[in-house]
Length: 405
Image 1 (tube, rainbow, N blue to C red):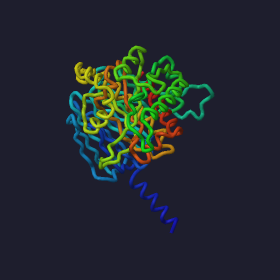
Image 2: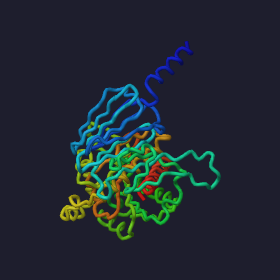
Image 3: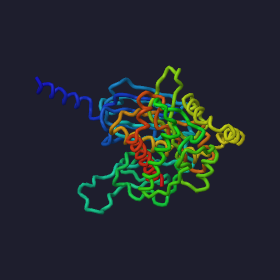
Image 4: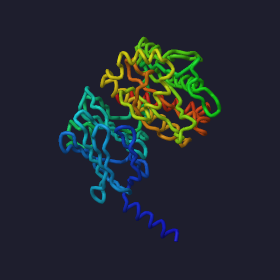
């Protein structure tokens, strides 16, 4: 009987194909997560352009759920369907001012619809690092170098040069090295002093939890060669505007602000998970709610930014760069913490955060978890978990510089 069941299982695998899609989850204003039943590192695909803003992506897989159609906030559309018994096709139709980006991460395929970069309209693709098991010591593995202005693809010689798609894989440790040498990072621990922030389920102020994570992150980044400055390294209050002024004064390459999330006690929902935000005029209900909690620390600063209309003058370069940084950090955190914890992916989001306004470099705000959650509130206060968060954020920063510089 056992042998018969094993044979049936093998037949089902052969019938369904090596890669099976089991879920599709839209999130944010223009993002989709496609979940496979297994790791998709070996997944290969073909990208073709149908017309001006319409592309399709074909790959061998089996759609175990009904086909889906999605319409995003900017009216871009996306369809996922079984095109042939062996091939799944994703058809993406973007608006003239939009482009899409694809990231392959473990069992997930992420698709992001976002504003078109003004620096380039060509495709960028990163392939997985080659197997280094047979290499000699100190021999550098051959990897494909990519930039925003040049495409070097090995997947298809016939791929159109103006396909607006970015395909990424996880970063291997063999590709890390001296990425951080000479690069300046400002790490900002949210709140502080008179501003407790939210309180965890155990009554610990957010300002203390995020300060510990910021200190661990600072040390982790220094160990990797980065030059790191902290806006505060003790329990002191610093207004929002001075935080980014500090980063600008240091001529920093990145600004990373660390916070913990919360929901009102009377809320019918009990959310949890890691979320990474970047500054944008976009105001989804979720982003508005989080931003309101984080912005209330300094009325004077908010008035200053509102008067200057910073949110309406964010450059497209700044927005796209910050978006890329947010994606890398969110992915970096989840890759590390999920090795030992079932941490929820709260996704990359955009919103009007005053602490990021005024920064002259790519900047993000990380909500490391929900202090209001009965389990997560305890977890984010533990030193071992804080170390994982710091390592994941540092991996994300490495990934940002590796892919964009």
